[in-house]
Image (cartoon, rainbow, N blue to C red; front, top):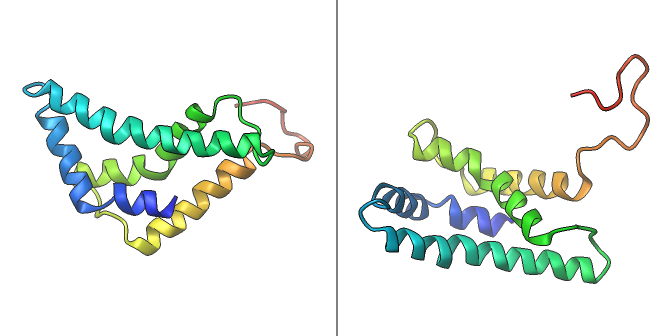
Length: 126
C-alpha cells in the first residue's frame, strides 16, 4: 500500500490527473484511456491480490474488487483531493507510510467492536 501511495500521491501523478480531469470534456477518449489503463487496471491488480488472499484462507471478502476500491480510496482520496485543490501539500513518503499502515490495519481488523458495547450505549446506534 505504501508503494501505491507513493505512486498515486506523487506530484507528477497528481498533475496528470488534474490535467485529465480538466480536459475530459474536450478529450473524452483521453479521460477514458486514463481511467481504464490507470485506475481500473490498478483496481484489478489489487482486487486479484485480495481474491488470492481469500482463496488462501487469509481473508474473507464477499467482493474483493469492491474491497480493493475501498482500500484504495481510504489510502489516497483525502490527501490527493486536498493537494489537487491547493489546500494541503502532498504528504511525504514517511507520512504516506504511516497512512498506509493505518489503512491496512483498519482494513484488516475492521472498525467493528468485538466486545459488548459499554453500559449505557445503544448497540447499533449511528
